[in-house]
Amino acid sequence: MKLATWNVNSLAVRLPQLLEWLAVQAETAPVDAIVLQETKLTDDKFPQAELAAAGWQVQCFGQKTYNGVALLSRTPAEAVLRNIPGFADEQARVIAGTLPCGPGAGTAGGLRVIGAYVPNGQAPGSDKFDYKMRWLRALRDWLREELAAHPRLVLMGDFNIAPEDRDVHDPVAWKDQIHCTPEERGRLHELLALGLVDAFRLFEQPPRSWSWWDYRNLAFRKNQGLRIDLALVSAALQPEVRGCTIDKTPRRNERPSDHAPVLLTLGTGG
DNA sequence: ATGACTCCCAGTGGGAGA
Image (cartoon, rainbow, N blue to C red; front, side, top):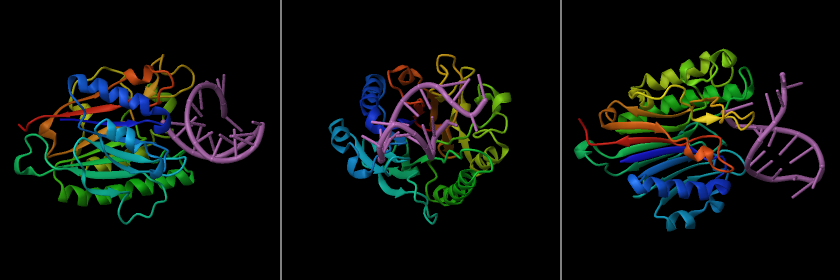
């Protein structure tokens, strides 16, 4: 089973690239479900027909201009939730759904997939930073309940937090900057403390692996980026994780997203 | 360097992203 997350930075612009990428994946192992961030489309404008024609079940949750998330799956998602229950939020940032039964799930139940677009936060001390902190605390509180209800769970998306200095191309320049502050990393640690693990770090990875590169200053060509797109898996799911990789190839497209997709491969337990 | 690029909605400029 293969899952993915991708901040597409406008699905209206990136739909052809998304469809092409999913088709290329299918040549080897098809993606079973993907969560998208920054679709920037209201639900009435979501490209339902094009995705349905490509075989996708669509759950979208968008707004005008900013944010917007979606869950695409081969089989229909169940128990779908939009945003964090009990946390009043005008911004569309979370979509969750249950995939009935992954291979080898046995009696363990379905796979809970949560796609998240964590607020950017702009700058430490700003109102947007406060919102990011409150949002992450609310996510933590809700996740505790989700984990109790769905032991096999993956939370993936654009976290807008670089977990450690090795996830930053220039840790000195980025020290205490947005994505790298101790406050943000502390909130991420609170999520991990619920029993989640950063799947990417379960495996040997190339050094200087990033998932985002600034559009400016030839950052991709110089490989100056951050790893801020993550897949966090629950303890019950961890034994099934077979791989977690970042696919840089779509970043080489013309008019690419500034983010690369992250892939999570699951296998039978053990 | 409060930059650089890209997207959006606007309407020939500005906010937001990261």
